[in-house]
Length: 431
Image (cartoon, rainbow, N blue to C red; front, side):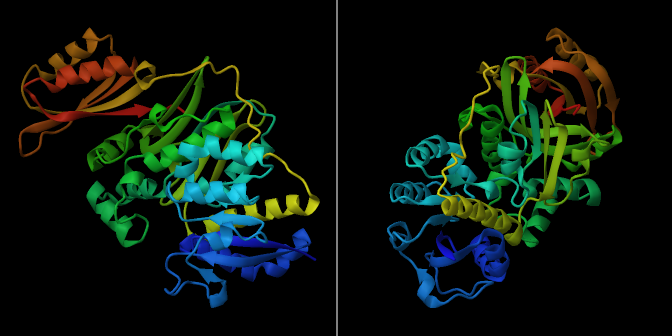
C-alpha cells in the first residue's frame, strides 16, 4: 500500500483534531483510498503542553524546515493562521514540490492570487475547505457540485461569534455587552473579538466565496465592512416587532453588470431560512441559475468540524497523488458579465433607522423634511415611549434609497439640536 506522508504546521485545537481523525479513522481512510496516510512530522512552537491527542515525541519539532525541506513529505498542512510566517512557509513548501492544505482565510483573501499562481505553475494545489464554514462543504460544492451554474448572489452568516451574540440578544434579551461576555465565557469569542464582531473575519471568507462564484479575487479594500458593535438590544427588539431578525450578513450580489461585495448587519424577514440560523451555526444561501436556491448549514467552528474539512482536503490530494494526476483546483473562470465592482455609496437598499430625540413638538417633521430633501421616502414611522431622560426613540422604515443620499441626510439630521445620539441605520434584504 502506497504511503502518503503528511507534515503538519500548527498543533493547536484544529491541528490536534486533524491528528485525532487521521489516527482514529486510519483503517477507514485506508479502505476508501487504498493509501496509507501517515503523519510524518508535527511542528509547533509549543511542543510540551498537553493536547487532546497524544503523539510520539519523535514526531514533534519546533523547526518548520523539518517539514518544508523533507523530500518525503507529500502534503504540508498549515494551521497556524495569520499572514506571516504562514505565507512564507506555504511559498517555500510549494517550491519544494509539496501540495498544501490550509484553513487560513485571512492569508488567502489577501495573498491568494500569488499563492494560487505559484501552486499552479508548479503543478501543485492549495486546498482550503476549512477556511469557510468549518465542516460545511461549501468550497467543494461551488467548485465541483455547482460547476455549471452561473451565480446571482451568495448571502452568508459566516461568523459564529457574531451570530451567537445576535442570537443571544434576540432569544435571551441580553444586551450586546452581556451577550459578548457570555460568548467569551463559553469559548465562542476570542479574548480580543474585534475581527469577529467588526466583520473582518466574515469579509475574508466572503472574498474566497466571491472568487469561486464570480471569478474575482477582490481586494479587502473593495469590500464594504460594518460590524455589529453598535447594534443595541432595542434595535433587535424593534426589528422583531416589525417581523425581522438582525443578522451579520456577508453578501456577494450581481446587480446588472455590477458586483456588490459587502458585510454588514442586516434585517431579514423572520420567515426566511437564514433568520432561523442561531448560536454559532453558519449558513450560506446560494442562488444559481440551474440549481436554484440552496442553503448550506452547519457548525461554523469547532475542533472536529474544522478538522473534518482539513482531512477531506488531505484525502482529495492523496487520491490525485495516487493517480499521478494534477487537477488545478483554482482553474477559475471570470464571469465576463460582471464588468465592475459597485461602491457602497452607489448601492441602494431599504433601511431601518432609529433616531434618539428630545420629546419636543416638530422634531418628527424636521427629520421627515431632511429625508425628503434627499429624495428619501418613509414607509412607516413609530415613535416609542420616552425614557426617564425625556428622550424618545423614533423608528423608521424607508423605501429603497441610495446609500450616498441616506448618509448625507443622516449627517444633516445628526446636527439637529433635538437629536441626542448618532442615528442607527441598518440595511434590509428581502431575500
